[in-house]
Length: 266
Length: 272
Image (cartoon, rainbow over all chains, first blue to last red; front, side):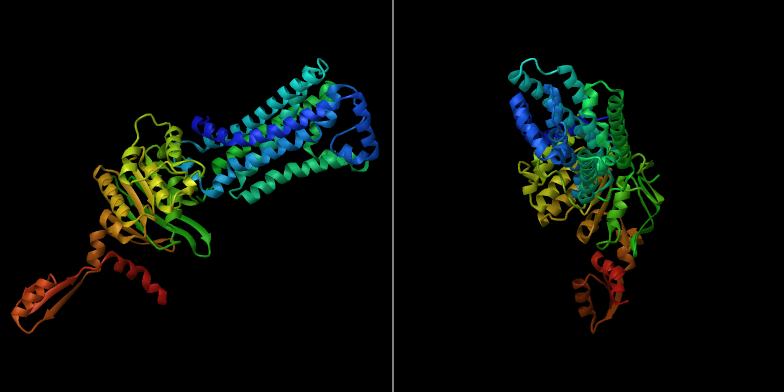
């Protein structure tokens, strides 16, 4: 089903990018968790009073009372959505479309390896990258919280939350992968694979800001990731996360099927 | 049954580009030369054979297997040199060949050391820093490393210097002796002339002629009868020009090079 040699090579190719993104996330996660402090909360809430729309658009709302509630407000609305999204866009594009464009795919196709295996291997490389990034984030959050505020973080809630976040990231990854499989030209692959998630995120920002624009939430898959609902064990939030996961599986499979059927003018 | 069998293959890219109703058969142990100017449809035909693109009409079979449906099975015993070599830039030659042998899941020892020595390639350099000729040599090593029975070579000597071209021709001759089936696309007449049993000429997507190298030469051989002043002179003339002497008359035949024949096929249209 997968080709080990290709998987190893591509994971090596992911490594540099993973390290960079992990470093960026480390910085944000530790700074933001470190800011959890009742006095600091007042400062942040005052920011919210000054520019409510801007803060709300990136998911930051005032009045969080628990550490995890604080993290949801200040990490799960922007940092943990946007950076993994950029990773998905860049890596997704690099896994198929860039090889097709540069002709390096010839070496992979001129071998007794099924196209299905090649595409599934590339998809699994992207999924592994996302998984590693999310596992790292989870470990980091637990570690930083433990150091700064011992035993204040509800770990089980965090695991549920990051499970749902992983489903969201998978869906973003699957869109990027699908775009990469459809186009043999990175220009278009990036436009679709990057454009769709970014546009959806902008809709989410709009929906967050106010009542008039709230209808935008029906047009973006980001709505399906309901962090507060997951913590509160709301069934709609769990269904939302499942839908994200199922959507991701469907799109990954679609990408693989398209790659198997398309003409490659190499 | 033919080892490589292309039947009525058509692929219309519009505005006269593509291939039209193309049929080629290459038998086991045969070297088939695929000759034609740029944009004639050589690479398009090869893409079909490699299973990169699906035939719209017609069919392609290698060893009786459909080139699109069973591409992975066919690839087990096939070696391919692409017309343009674009491998993973950030690898060294050694890493690339190692990767390929793992990727192909090859257990037995490869021909890599022998090929590297034959073509004097130093594979420790990053591929992106390699010259055109070095990349080409790497492509040759990659195509022959698993000792395939069938070879599809798209302009295999481009970028190679004359010495290396000769070594490549030697390699092809050896492979042919081992009974390999080879399809070789080329512009270089000498390499085709020296290696191929039959030649197919393609132009504007249509096969204009398929013949053995000898037949092509014979068909285009011109014979002259020359009358000379004396039998002595006639004998000298016959010696100098490899003719047949008969009294005052000498019969000489001009063996045209393949290149001239080729130009006869293609050159004429320039004035049309």
